[in-house]
Every structure is written in structure tokens, then in C-alpha cells.
Image 1: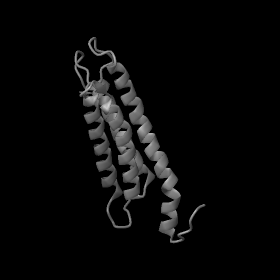
Image 2: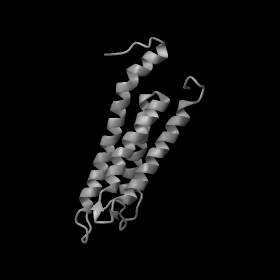
Image 3: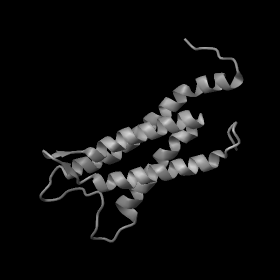
Image 4: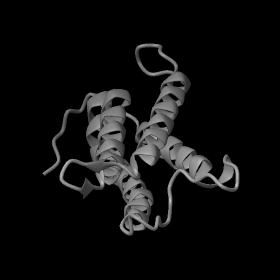
Length: 145
């Protein structure tokens, strides 16, 4: 399948999937980070805002709802792989608790939740704009009220 410019959408989807995976891995390693002043949760903000922004702009650029889903899928698979599957038994990327930092478990749990919410929001925003894309493609230009 190609868009109207002849560029293969499968290549676009693959790049978006890899971008989502990169965001997921980067954010997973930021879970234990504390900013100056003891502020934690940068990874949570990146998970939510990053997945929404990348999915939203991907859907706008490709004019495709699946394009909005690809970064979220890449993020989810990467986070699950880094968080549970690809590690020795004594190493953890997203910790559930650390004795000296009791709030890190909450940050890790919110990271997983907010990243998934961000991916869903991006898909919902793309689905909302789908009718406008179809109207512009068909040449009707009719506005919905």
C-alpha cells in the first residue's frame, strides 16, 4: 500500500514502530531519575506526552489511523521486553521498589499506565480526524458541524 505520493506506508509504519520502541526504552531507563529538588516522574511525563505527540503527528502526516497506533505498539513491546523478558534475574530496568527510594514503584507503575493511555489517546485523536481526511481526499471539502 502506498500513499498518494507513492511512498510505501509499510516503511512509514516500521519507522514509527521503531521510534515508539526507542521512546519506550529511553523512558524505562529514566524511571529512577530524580530531578534537582527531588522531583521524580520525568519518565511518566515523557510516556504520556511522547506517545500522544508522536502518534498524533504520525497520523496527521500519514493521514492514517494505523500510523497513530504504530508508536504506541513499539513503545509497549519495548517496555515489556526491557521490563521483564530480556534481563538476568538480578537486574531490573523498571524497579517495583528500592529500599532507599520508596516512590520508585509508583513511578514505574505510572510509567506503564500513562504510556498506554498516551497511545490510546493518540489513536482516538487520529480517529476523530479521519472523517476530515476522507472528505479532503474525496474532494468534497464539506465541513462537519
